[in-house]
Image (cartoon, rainbow, N blue to C red; front, side):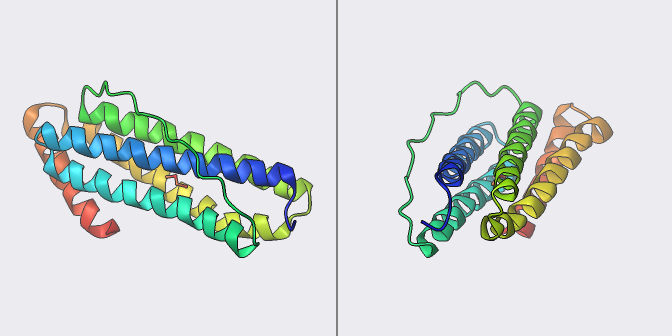
Length: 167
Ligand code: OFO
């Protein structure tokens, strides 16, 4: 095998992390739609698709190395969303955890001199910088624009614009 058992296990875990992220964003998109935040709903729906693409990237990497990938069971997201701001906060926390998981695989790959995995994960490092920055700037909008109904409506419109950018 072209990668170690250790790295393989971490990559399989990462497939699960990306799948759960995609599932979580799908739930948030649905919650937003039902609560009248159409822009945010499109934004999170696109984000869900992006996370699925991340999962597929790892599967493709393993397949290119002629390694079967394990497709994990996905978790049911906790269905207790109370506000758009809370959804964005949880998203930022989740993205930070994803970044830590990617860092862990990179550290392991570097220790094992696994240059191909190290190089493969560079794309994810850039992606995580963008995603953390994205959610940090969305959260800043609540401080800048406000939290009353009109302000949230404005933020929903901003998310609508962002969803066109990322699609
Ligand atoms: Fe946003 O997490 Fe994928 O990599």
